[in-house]
Length: 202
Ligand SMILES: Cc1cc2nc3c(=O)[nH]c(=O)nc-3n(C[C@H](O)[C@H](O)[C@H](O)COP(=O)(O)O)c2cc1C
Image (tube, rainbow, N blue to C red; front, side, top):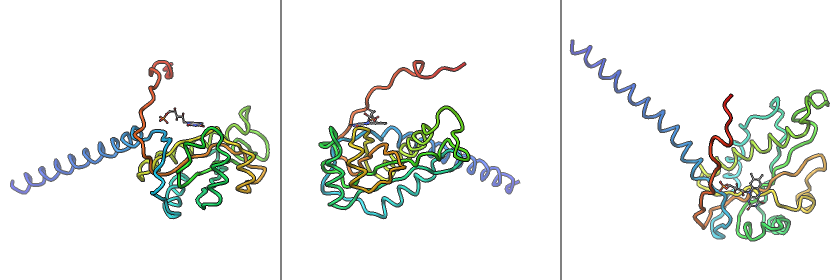
């Protein structure tokens, strides 16, 4: 009798533990999502190592992509000389990136994502390359936040200047530049639209 009681107790304890750990995982994802905000000022004294960038991009590589072609490429700009050149190419975002220790330029190789045997699979064509790059950036900013970093994705940049500075091949389309570092401001949360404006359940 005692054995049965003990068994029941252990069963209940096991169930409770798994319930708690499930809800912990779910909330930690939500915490990362709500903690991530676009940060436009960085601490000049806090650096990021190459190993940390490798850890970050290794997770980003888990993002889905068209037929798993993985057409997205990342140029992590970290050396003083290259940072100076890349920051000069950031147009209206120059103040934002002034003290960022890393800039990550995201590109995609044309004719791969959205293509089968060299032919566009549908009307979106190379738009799927941009789609995949965006997915990768979503993973990037969330994983960065989980690692304790801040980011901002930037679409305003001089693509030609970046191409020259970083020797980016002509078959790659330059998409975003992501600043990576430790923010030194508390960003506010820009309001989101009402759910029923963006979600249509049919
Ligand atoms: C494709 C894209 C391009 C963006 N370009 C810029 C930019 O050039 N400069 C900038 O300060 N923020 C840029 N942002 C950041 C958005 O302004 C920001 O994500 C939006 O206001 C929501 O704020 P949150 O990221 O803090 O939630 C860009 C974001 C995306 C996704």
